[in-house]
Length: 524
Image 1 (cartoon, rainbow, N blue to C red):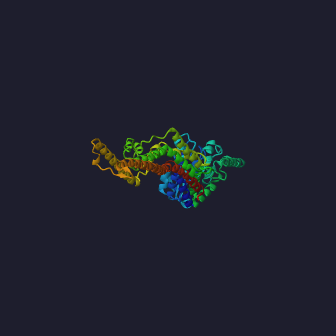
Image 2: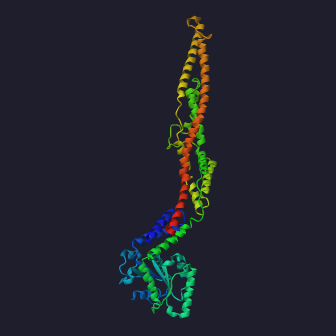
């Protein structure tokens, strides 16, 4: 039986771990206290049975205690409150550690016999005018295995008893006995009517089926029935387990209210992609992609353009370097990209909330707000994380191999143009000196060779520059697409870490909580 309880307590501990920070703090703390108390109580074993006599002022608890013990161990009298601290009667040899845990200073040891292992406590009045007495009662009521509520014909219907103690303990009916003491004050029919009315009130409290005994501690009438119940519970050694099981049921029920009957949704791929797209815009991925394309065209023009005008390109800064990008992945570098605009931030937040709402499905409060909070928890960290994601992306900065060949060809054509120009200048100078015949003037296809070198080289260089420019535009678009894909992969990783995974974690927490509370309630 305790093995099943162990499973329930372990499940409750798991539920407490999940519920902390998510559900009502009071319910979570109560469940945590039960887990702690169950561990401590089971650690002392279940051989001992702790029974407490509890009740209001004047009900005769101490007199009943003495009657059960068979000796005047507790002070009984008309002066109220008579019992200031709990008194313990111990049959046999219960573990000292258990008694220390109960923190009951007044202990009286008796011969074991049939009641070996019984620890009977006489508690102070729960309605005492002294606050310390009430606090002591409430402390011990949480620790004992079985409670014998002692009432009298005058106070059995007291609202404080029913509203504050009995009704909240409806799940503990298996760990209670109600004794109508001072039964000798009533005649037969009056006693039967009083007992019937008490049973009716208990049924209204949700405690129907709880044993109700009419007893007189003074005359010992009905005392045998109470002793028989105590003897059975002591012999069965199940009172501690029953009490802890009821405690687990009570607090697990409170936590289970956080599950409700709704159904969770899921993080759909389409919603996740919308979040990634919104974050991609906020991260400035299109801006960087445009800079990548422009940087590629600039570098291509410097490598393959017409040598006599390519220097003009150097006057324009590299678009990527202006953004502090382009020297390889550098996730620790802060780029010069502008931060997201208010519109981009609003779109990103809206996409995250839409994903959260879809994932929360039909869950009841507080889970929709928890899922939404998980999706938007890292809003303040997103700009910096997205900036690092872009800075750490591989932007495909490798130079195409054909650039070297095209650059070498342009250099040869430039040399040809220079040679032709110098040749023609030399001819002009010699003509001015009337020494034209000093230098030869060969022709190719009827065109003087220096003219062919100058004009042909210029025309070929310009045509090659136009051709490489067109090819570089195609390469720039391809490189921009590769860079965009690389940046989006890193943005998606940020989205998963800061938005999607927290939402999935909340959904997993919901499933874990509901599974744990179900096990805590049913033991399977």
